[in-house]
Structure formats: C-alpha cells, structure tokens
Image (cartoon, rainbow over all chains, first blue to last red; front, side, top):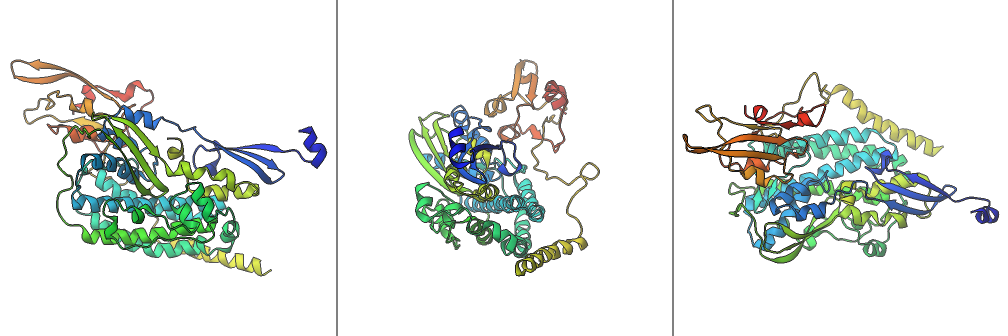
Length: 371
Length: 138
C-alpha cells in the first residue's frame, strides 16, 4: 500500500456498501475498491438472505413446493408458481384445462406489471426522484387487491396447483382487471412525463453501464437486461410455454444496453403485458380450472428442465423425480442471481455516484439471489 | 444556461402532475382508525368449525397435519366408541411457524378447518403464538 502511495500519491480505498444500504434493494453487500472516485474493483457479497430453498424443496412434497416457490422472488410470486408447476405437469403428462391456462397467463402478466412498477418506483428513488414511488405503489396496490380477491393473499399467493389453479375467479375479477387496465394505460403517459422524458433522469442514465450484445450473451443475462442490449430473447416467444403462442404481442428491445434502455424496455413491457391480459380475458370461457390429478402427486422417475419468462428474466427449474412424493433434486435458476454477476464487470471504471443507478437498473430481488 | 431552463421546465412538468392530485381524493387509508375491506377469501389465522349438533366437526383424519409444508399443526386423536367416530383430544397450531399457504384448508375433507379474516394476529412472545384447541375451535 505504501508503495502505491509513493508511486501515485493515492491510496486505494475499500468501501463496504450494504448490506443495510437503502439502495441495495435488500441485503446486498458490495465491496468496492476505489481509486479516488473511480471504482477499480467491485465484488458483490451475497448470502445474507440464504434460506436453503433447494434443500428445503427436497424434503417437501411436489404440491408443497409451490408454496415454497412464493419465497424465491417475493415480488413476482405468480411467475415462481408458474415455474414450479410446469415441471411436474410435464413429467406426468397432465393437460391443463384451457380456462386454467388463461387464468395463469392473466396472473403472470399482472404480476409482471406489478414487478416492473416496483422497479419503476424504486429506480426513481435510486436516481433521486421520489414522486414515482408513490404513484407506482398506488397502481400496484390495485393489482394486489385483485390478487387478494382471487387467492386471499397479497404477496405469497400459492395460487397455482399441479394441473390448474386452486380457485376460480370471483365474479368481480374480470371487470376489475378491465377497469384496472383502462386506469393504468393513461398512467403510463404520466410516468413518461415524470421520468422517461425528464432530462435530469436521462443525464444520470443514458450512456451509463453499457452492456454490449456479445457481453450480454456471454454473461448469460436474460429478461429485460438482455433485451435492452438488442438481443431479441424472450421465452414467451422462443420456447412458448402454456398458451403464450396464441397471443399477439411485441417484444420491446433496446439498442445501446445502457441503464436508460433497460428502464425503457421495462416500461414498454408493461404496455405489452396489458395487451396480453386484454386478449386473455377475451378468450376466457367457463370450464374446469383444474385437471383430474391424484391428491398425492407422484411424478414418474425422470428429470426435466422447465423455464418461464419471469419479470426479472429466465426462471428455470430443473427437477429430478425418483417416482416418490418428494423431488430428488430441485435446482432453481434464479434470473436475479445470474444477472447480478455482470455487475462486477459493469461497475469497473464508473464513478461511485453511478453505482446505485447501475445496480437499480439490473432490477434484482435479493430473495431470489440468495434463495 | 439552456440546461438550467430545461431542468426547471422538466421539474415544473412533473410538479404539474403532482399538483393535479391535490384535487383528487387521497388513496391512502389512515390504518388504525379506518380499515380497508378485505376479501372473503383472505387467508388469515385458522379456525375449526362445529357441526350442526354443536360438537366439533373435525374427526382427526390428520390430512392437514400431513400436508402442512412447515409442520405447524399437531394433533392427538382418540376414538369415541359410543358415538362411533374419532375426536381430537388436542389440536395445536403453531402460528410462529405457519406461513398461511392455505393447503390445510384446501385439503380438509370435512371442510371444518377454515381461515378467519383476521390479519392483526400478533403476540408479545412465541408461546402465545401457539394456539391450542380452546382458541381454534370456535
């Protein structure tokens, strides 16, 4: 260290950011090595929220694992439920009733809007605009109320079941969703005025934290992060699960892969989700909501990887069944965990003030990073 | 100079949206004084129902105990020879463990285990989170 001071006149400083920093979206601990204001090395230190989800899953029945899956990415639990049910369904060759499929799609897309709204609100706070936070949470509250009327919970839904969903929609759900979308569309324009076209916001985000196309692929990014870099990769189109191939929707992509593009992709995705929900509601017809499945689920021996497009990216579940009521192995590929890895490369050479802008733009949930 | 004007204009535009909401009824609820209406499907604490004769409806089939992912339900069962059915001599739910997933209620074949709309369940120590039958059977 003294040698360094002699040569350059400066000393490298290690700064601990987190785990109780308000902008780390939970308990992320960043070890930043800094030369003055410039970051020379960034190391995310994770594991503060580790609960051993994969090991816990091996001691729970297949049905109970859906309840556990709520706790991976706790602000998009419906997508987690989706990933948790697809594996055993494919192993057991269950055909899910059409109504249940559409209900699932509506739920997953509403959840995408709710998750992106949280991103929108908290990213505003990260950059220094406090107002969007209140507006985002006001709209999210309406989605949570809709969820509450369907499954009785506001955060950990546990709504999907192997073969369908647990309860039919209440009578006021479909009108509720319709009125929410009618209410939500004009609000998106308000958001654009507040953040997207705001020159102060753009100065902080445009050209910051660029990820090139090749880098994004090399670091195995997924979700809005890879699409912002210009890679048109969306599991809903590329490997359509459930009934996603029946819907007409676009995949918004960015060009430069900077913080602003990642933000814009999410904002546009909310519009597309609203479109999918509208189409799904029109296709909703009365019918069964769950296929005939034995109460004790015993998938035949085998292994399978299923993935869904969660709001954060590709959420995959690799499960091995040995024919018993418990899964033999239950591996979860959390998108937040994989997306977080590129942070150490992106932060190198940036100023300390940009750390929060870059970290916020990746949109991680620590419950999913640590699991 | 142009930048300052641009920033100020953006702030004013943002303020315009905020100003609009001065004249709209607030969406916030002053919680302890007023409460929001919660859904009838709300997954709150558990409650056992009695049957039409006024005796407990639960016949101790142990399905809720088995299906619980966090093992928070425990019970002891005995058989009443006179009435020719089973009863539970103790039925304890540890709400310190319960994650309110609702699988037990869904699985109950007698439909005698239900959720209450209670969302303000709290206690000063962990022992009072463990509810025995006198609190659950209502």
